[in-house]
Image 1 (cartoon, rainbow, N blue to C red):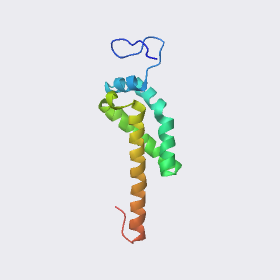
Image 2 (cartoon, one colour; image 1 turned 180 degrees about the vertical axis):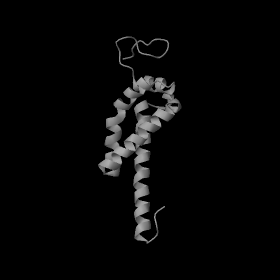
Image 3 (cartoon, helix red, strand yellow; image 1 turned 90 degrees about the vertical axis):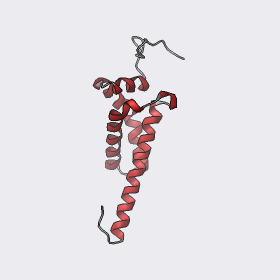
Image 4 (spheres, rainbow, N blue to C red; image 1 turned 45 degrees about the horizontal axis):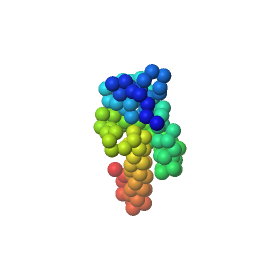
Length: 117
């Protein structure tokens, strides 16, 4: 069901803004919108990172990094290419996989007797 929106893309009064709408506001530098952007995907981002990296502390770091990237790159989100949550989760998955690969490479260097980079 589609709801009425104001011309600015902001939801009509009484309606919660979507993640897509909030990202548009973040792209304009609205810090309060980022507070909501942070809250909406933080749980799913952490959960995905936790499943991929399997270490709680590493997953927390990945989640923080991803949400910082969202803040810096919100203007790159293109709603014609998919949902905002998919955009954020794709970043989370890529960052998580990068973290695992980095740890594996480091462990391989240590096992081979080479100093880590």
